Image (cartoon, rainbow, N blue to C red; front, side):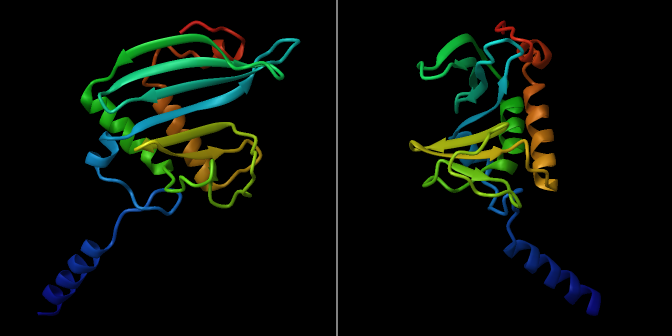
Length: 182
């Protein structure tokens, strides 16, 4: 009788618990994730005398289409899109990516940035990697900073690296060296 009671208690307790992501927030259902625009990428300096700042952005839409852009920022000039690639993911791949990236999803749409647990909150952080989810024009961005090392940021970098590997046209080594080919 005791083992049956224990198993029933365990099942009821587990049913009341929700999964949490690396930020300690509730994990969205696959249905809700499928309705969101999901973006991720990284910021970097290219190896050149002028050292412009660049972003590599990947945006996955609810219809599983995607856009990859390399955007350059120079001093006070407006951002310039240097390269763009478009495509479509299989539903299985898109769902897997959304689920994986949701481990870094923030519910905080009021502030522009949410830092990883254990990292200082800053109004303008030095962003290395980022993940953003947008539903109903309410974006929320989670940032990983290069100078903050926690177990969550290490796991976050791994998640983003694995997500980037889905897009073979992105050669990180070439992009960091200044290539704008996608």
